[in-house]
Image (cartoon, rainbow, N blue to C red; front, side, top):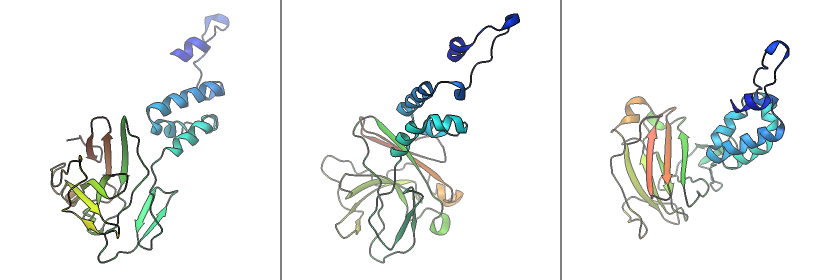
Length: 219
């Protein structure tokens, strides 16, 4: 409606010009639309680029900003995993008998709220066993995540050698939450883990962590 009032013009015979499309707008206007979308949701900017090639070209600078805000896996070189898809996909290719795999992304903001999603392409036995998705502290020594097989919280610590300790207390001032029921028991064991999308929201101001799977309601 705003575009119609700004750009519509009367033609001969009283006809009104059709409202312009995004591609018809000046480059600087499309750029402003993209930056407004970026301030609310980087996903909206990435969707905006799919409108057409013209809009995609006009949103080039904003698209680069949105891509820079994507979470990517940050792991050391290790024979046990392979990182691909510009840092967005991690695949386990080997395992060690005494060390569990622990992979992290980049640092999150300290204020506001952060939401991201992880898709499980494949898991052994297709039940999510051995997988948990969540957050960790800055030092990557203590984590809080949703254990996909049981639907419960797991608080796990990692020593300097990469060995996990599920019984260690979290750092001072942090809750544990271990074994707290988050989702229905066996939700992925029954439905299958392959293709499941686990969405995580961390409210930095409230200090709360929530999850949902495959777009379901948050508990």
